[in-house]
Length: 346
Image (cartoon, rainbow, N blue to C red; front, side, top):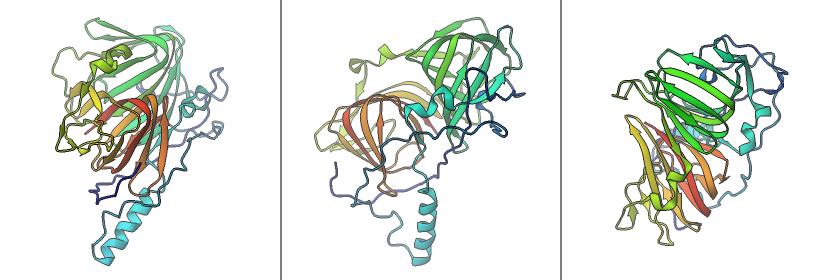
């Protein structure tokens, strides 16, 4: 997968894994929560709840001996030592990454029954994957029920529905139904209501940007369906003198040695939040120099994502989630044709 390596630009941001405790759908080991309607995004206090089963992080043994040179090479020794210490600390954990079973309901933290609802008996649970202060990621589960959401949403949320069926309603009564294979975007400032008709299990990303960016009134939910991302509906990215110049996820990079260029479709682009799908053929290898801060959910195929700081790689296949920091650098190697759902937070 490797060509001769070049120097890299580095704006590393340490990302931290967040621990979690067990959730029992049957109601065992539950903890009642007094948090707000957005409790599944709130900080969690797992005290007193049973410890979780160990999560699986999949294959991590594909490390390379020709690791990229440190972006701090050539600096004074004192600066180099400080940089090395920072890089060592940042590399203590790979980019937040989870195999599909990390978000199994048996690993989620129960929040107990919701404080307010007007039908059913909704109870929810969650587990976080990463949080850098702006971009958060995790999973959520909720049983049947409905509730009003009169308070403006504090952040923009994007989620992929793993199972279940539900409905989000805007302030003026417009309804948005969703189910497995749908991507849902709830913009910052949205008000309305939730209805869960069949227990919802979803993976989510949240961009905690400062301002409400939507200009419409009322602010509306957006639901996009998997079939709208068929390969023929994606656009080939632009290659200029061997450089892919308009990649919305990985930034400018050299075209793959096999001559392939990825394709993509951005279907939400409002303020500091971009949501879309990225696709590439098998056998492609891309050297990322300044990747975007992003949540990536692998929909199809197999790829390796390599951290240029350490040469450590993760095998990402359908159902896996990875969160990468702003300015990250390394490699994306496509083993089997892949399609990835992404949220970029700027």
